[in-house]
Image (tube, rainbow, N blue to C red; front, side, top):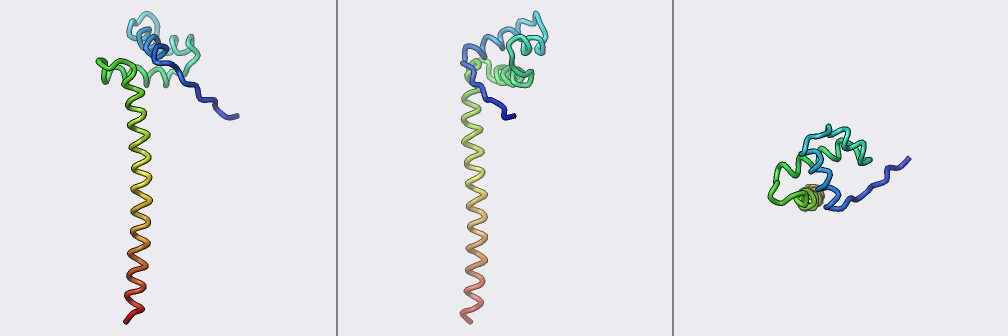
Length: 98
């Protein structure tokens, strides 16, 4: 069974984080009431605490930056592999010219 990805609005995330920070209920209880995983809620709270002046939106900015970083890292590995192949080809042809 495939998991269905849900995207929550910034307001929804901010309200969930606010509920956790108020401390009236445990984080697990709040997550269960909202129908989200405790891990997701924990991530939202951690990202908020890491950068409270930006609010919950800091998690979205970080997510975009993380995605871009992963994409660039993948491209870097591809280029390294291509470079290694070209070096081997150059060595092979240099040997055969003698």
